[in-house]
Length: 341
Image (tube, rainbow, N blue to C red):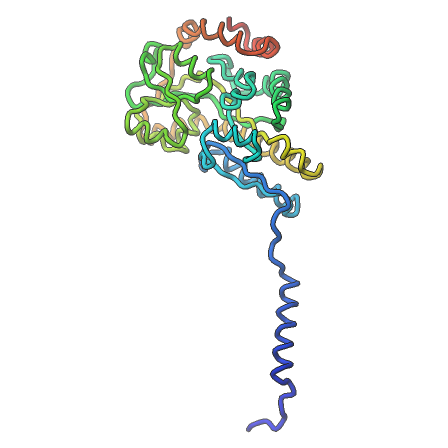
């Protein structure tokens, strides 16, 4: 039966009420405000690398700890440009934050590359003791003088190995004439040239196609990068040389760093350094598993039985490097490694 009670809500009152309800809903569930500070973070390593994974975790923690005020926008795999371009962008402020190897940053601070002197360190703990200690302090002080703020704990790139498409590297003579992709920094180029190879700097993003088209015969990188970048596909041999140990400096444009309030600086220092310590563990534990994995993916793996001939051939290189780095840095290096010259 139809109700005889009339509806007291007129159309006008209904529309007004609906508008008020919508307004209440908007107040209760506001759209997320844009971050007060946003840093672009560029680096050459791909998304599958532990460095990117840990940086992604750190970015989430920083966003939460600052209540959304500080956001890191991550650009892996050289998305913002080559190594040299990224360093230029960092210095100009076009990119606020960068994660780069010692060799790349040596174009700004020469002593940054000192840990990459060939066959210097015998283990990762030995290398980290030097970089966390006085030797690293010298490099970080020089970075600050060049307008770059370095976080106190470096991340790890690991020992570098040689993956080739032509032949395994078992003796120093196997490097003769080999077109090896290296970073463009003097240390890498000069070392491989002294060993008899033909160093060929190629941007990280172009390595895969360079191996396919035979522009390069080999790449010298840590195993994690070989696996993450799938460079095992266009190559055949992995030679465990441990020829260079390298870290990853996480650095910020100094003006951008100074623009941050102290509380946000504190959060960044805490979370970036904590993530770096986790990444160190990732890299230290990864080598055994990666060796087996790369072998299962088709690479023939061999250990270099004797590095003495490599070091003997590098004597002119060591002499040149001693004159390249500051006397203070070289003395601190040899305090850890023993005499190289």
